[in-house]
Length: 91
Image (cartoon, rainbow, N blue to C red; front, side, top):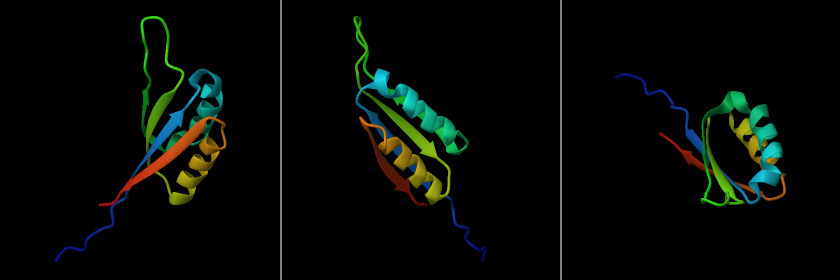
């Protein structure tokens, strides 16, 4: 019988940003520092004809050791107005 190999879990981070324009530079700095571990990045925010919504949500698929994921989360959570939630899907 073939030996089962452990699969890497899928880690998804939801990054809620309350004031996108104000916090965008600091958030981008963190994402750039950990860019080699970010497989997928999706930004969501509301727009209207007259203006953009002040808040937004970034979804990240992260392929990294747990220590790196924790470091990314800590860096983002240290930014005032940013909150990070983590989902892990094991196989």
